[in-house]
Amino acid sequence: MARPPVILVAERSDADGPAVPDALERRYGADYAVVSAGADAHEALERVAAEAGTVALVLADDDLPSPEGETVFAHARRLFPDARRGLLLAWGAWAHPETARRVLEAMAQLQIDYYVVRPHALADEDFHRTVTDLLREWRGAVGGRVGYTVIGEDHAPRTHLLEQLLTRTGVSVTRREPASPEAARMLAEAGVAYPGAPVVATPEGAFLLDPDDAELATSRGLGTELPDAPVDVAIVGAGPAGLAAAVYAASEGLSTVVLERESLGGQAGGSSLIRNYLGFPRGVSGGELAERAYQQAWVFGARFCLARTVTGLDLADGFTLRVGEDSVRAGAVVVATGVSYRRLRVPALQRFVGASVFYGASSVEAKAQRGRAVYVVGGGNSAGQAALHLARYAASVSLLVRGPSLAASMSSYLIAQLDALGVEIVTGSRVTDAFPDAAGERLAEIEVERVDTGERQRVPCEALFITIGARPRTDWLPSEVLRDRWGFIFTGASEADEDAPEPWAGRSVPGALETSIPGLFAVGDTRRSSVKRVASAVGEGSVVISSVHRHLARR
Image (tube, rainbow, N blue to C red; front, side):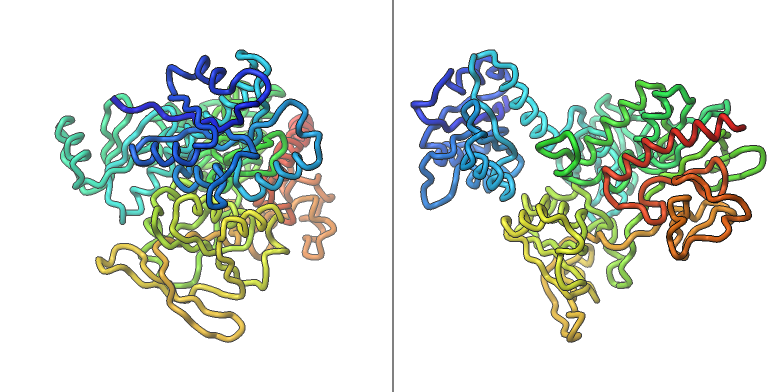
């Protein structure tokens, strides 16, 4: 029988109020092993690790002695990188400047995830809410609520993509090599022969042989079918902007369909932790934020069609969106297709894309980098968040930046956390070549060139994450939709832009989020001059629906 995960408590013996271990044992004892360690917390963590156990949560006082200068939290992070860590505080202690400084410093240095106020009674629901939230976050990090298995070669890009698509729908995924004993047993018991392409085993016992994205979405109970009747508004893209638009459109009584070619969340959906989003003091993963927004839109009646790519837009008699061989008609359209990362012009990287070279900050791939040397290319917040998450697992993480510093492109809290974790910052440099391992299947080294001197150096790199540039996904739109030379969509908010079109195709300047076509709106990263932040995208998606109402009323 598997051992239960551990909740470890290291508190002073003279602490006021009910003993924290007693409160935890009463509420969580059936599912977790509550260990009271006191000053012996370091040894207790070592014992759990030696017994191949798992620590889910560490709660500790701040003033316990720490041998050799390593705090309980730092020791727990090193041994159990997924464990959540909470600093125990007495009620009202946060009002003391020194305590507040310590909490903020510990969070900035990623020693703790949050503070936890001691219970005033065994059934203190505020205390248990914080604990439950931390345990839920731990469970999400180690594996979601439903288990899928992807059987496929590690060097095959499709194996990685299937895992990413499933994980971003909120389920746990186990990846198995086809030649492994576990995979061989599963296939034999199901009477399935490995077809030379990835196989997905569902929790219900079905085996999907080389499934496409739509088949995968259907297995998760996610919609892929287009509506037969016209809708009031069609939203193209299910990133933060598109999801916000869906929530507001559906909640205000508009028949709404959301079309998404991949999975929920867009680029933000792959972020391991967004720390500065309003209302989430501990931060929130992009995947969880997207899942919450999806559920919110769904309960208001929005219809989602995932794994469906919009290939064109006809403007005759309203709007008709072409989706492969199918179509859907709408009174208004909101374009929220976001952007994709720009490809590096390094031909040698292409053979590794999807297996050991990844475009985007994929949190799914982080655990696979245990013991590896990893590089992240980019200087924005996405790059910083990726580097922080990878630092939980990789042997070393280096951030490669073409510019002279991070100050102009990355939030200061991320820069401080990168420094606290010892992530190497390599400025004024770029990748110019790549080299495989002995088997020729995975990346082993990259060549890095100094931009100012041209000096080149080969460095170990077993995985490369690229988060630079932005290419808007607007090539499916007709020529009547005015765009800049990069493909970003002009809207009324671009009027003051020196490159704005004049005279707006012979009509008055449209509303702030309306394009050159009445009734066609653009929000989020795909819009010219937008602020590339999640909160900004959500704001635009929320606001645009009032313009949609006005357009529909004029028809």
